[in-house]
Image (cartoon, rainbow over all chains, first blue to last red; front, top):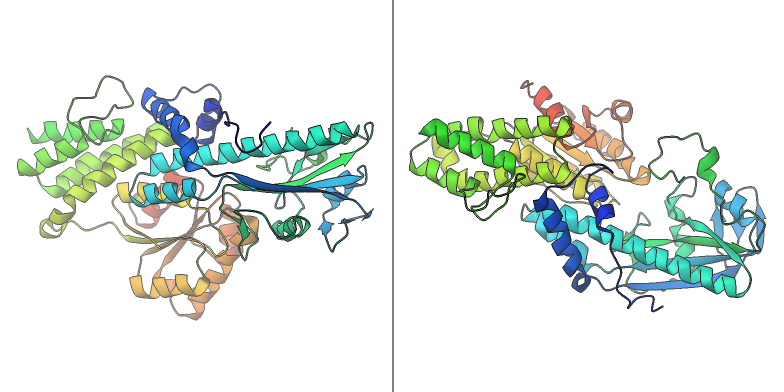
Length: 224
Length: 228
């Protein structure tokens, strides 16, 4: 699999969902045409790039995972995952800035519907690319008879967004096409970063999901 | 004649049709005059600008809001309608002053420091324009001092603040305090919005209102404006 060059198949229904349609609702033919047109042509608007690395976990305590090289992950829930793992993969990817620049330009011109559709396609593309990189890390781990966890990103649950700095530090502060702003947000916005735990089968790594026991039932990031 | 054109403008805003070439929510409408052609026809016929705005545009967006609330319309549908109103207002702009039509109020929209997200703010802005307000979007990732400066210079009636992150929403409280310290707080009503904020958070930080979504934000401002 060519991580960046193979075409990314965008799921039209997921784009409809992102722009406000729920499972049973049917978009008007006009909206459907607009989404289809953008899906047919979005590929010229993206310039994907990514970086990933795998590091051995040095130690885990209550709220802290030490990966060495001054990379410390601070989160109770991340620590509960990493105590089952031997290694952790760090990754960051982007689809580039042009698509969101175009969306901003369209919004400035008053074409907010087109901007919203384009923004949703950008988010969907970044997520698809993240899934592809996750699969690549899974396959690499599989060759060593290891299994991988779900993805976790800074800013979700009790893992503060300021920890983005640690992900980028683990990646050598050299992620092509992405910079961090003062709030530790990635620029361009259509970027995804995070960690994936890697360990031996039988340690409940693949299914580890802190959302199951979490009391924040209305959390927008809740995973089933 | 006048009633007929106004009714057609209303219908086409609800359909979200800007020009003759556009499809509506309903199919097979392409080829019939859209909002652009109808507003131009209304002006050429001497129909009062205030009548076009109040009976054609504002009334139609109220209908769109109801359709959204009842689940008949979705976000793209209301955006198409709001864009149609935006186009109509551009055509009417040169005629507003001489006809004595004034915007319902002036609103500054801003996304707070550290936050780059602006799709939600754009949606609220276009709906507010559709409802007859003058909206100035001053951007995203804005320093508190820049927002205070804009309030001082622009003298808006309302300030809309947006944030998508729990880590950036805290700036909203800083902005309110800075406006108090600058003696500007009682000159502007502040409405906050964005995924992590709530009615309770608005009260906690001393904002005047909270918009749960685009139409709710418009409704909150209309209520403050004594319109609802």
